Image (cartoon, rainbow, N blue to C red; front, side, top):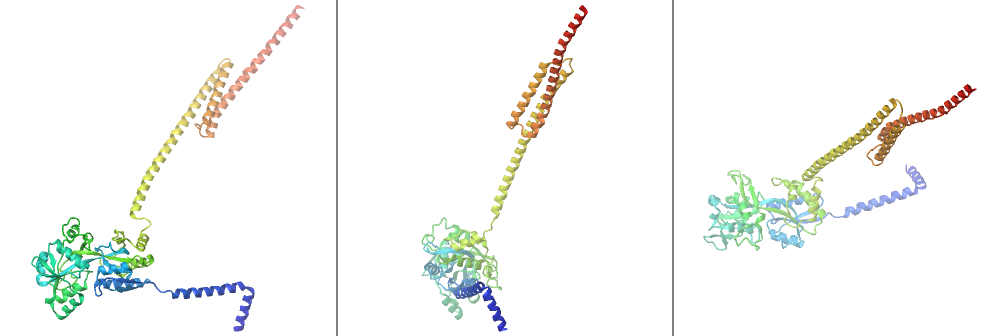
Length: 494
């Protein structure tokens, strides 16, 4: 078997040396390409969504897993709050971040918007014994200890603006006209709940979080807190237009104009008793996915695919949809997001179809009108030519009747025949001029017209010829008659 293979190899080498060298070169090149591509590491990015252990962090991990499955390894890193996350992305220490869309972003020049996500809800949790009173009026919070979240966080800023709109001041010392603000770290909350130290917990807690909030769930299930609605979200948003509240100035880190109404579904946190008992309206803030400007557009496009084409899109209801890309961007849009948005645009939109339909309708009307005018002009020209042709035939018929009258008379008048002939020649010359000027459009029409003219002219020419021959015969016969008469008289004289 080996000898047979060697003999065939020799034959191939002798007959097809170029083929052998080309095959060896191709195999070597393929090996180099495979090894080089196999050595290229997958791109890596980092994503932060705030503190670990929150619902937002859980969803960030789900998004990171979906991005990683598309070839870009993504790692979730914690951050203290939105301010810390924006600073990390702006410096390039972190590539992506989920941040609250109500935060002012003017100081972060290197942070670009990727896409809006879902809306988060401002949870107002109060101890069960005061829940009914606070539900009737949020001003019942006066004189109580209220947790507004850590200083500088989105929760603290939003809660302070809500209390300011209600005319409730916050201070470190308790007073009857306001509340005493308190900030609890997650570790402190867990310790108080674990040790059953409910009295050490604040009377009310503001917490901006993704629904369902894991933090809110701890207060409700382990410390007997209840949710209270914040039903004036639209009034809160519009208050940014005309407001004398000192908290709502350019020094505030949030912009009320970007808040919105959010509904927490019934039974979200407890089934029996239901918490909340029905659809609960509260203040909401959009969540944005942002990125450092140095992240490549190709990476951002893979991130966008993971946002809208994976299980991450269905964690909230309604699911994330590409219609979000049509919303005005909160910050400068990342080039990768702009490219993805253009890629998702259909070749023809509904507006384009309407415009095209209207244009075609107008064009069809104009085309129909043009065809109608063309046909009208054609018919008019045809009628004019037909009238001209008819008038020529009528003139020829008149000449033929006069000619017939002359033929039936006792003698043919040469002058009258010549006059008719001149009329026919003038008529023929006029027809030729009309043809050269385009009034008579076709040669066939000219031929049809000249036929009767030529026939009548030829007939007159024959008549004139006969008249001249007859006249010549008469002139020859008269001298002969005179000669015959002279001869006869001479003979008689003899």
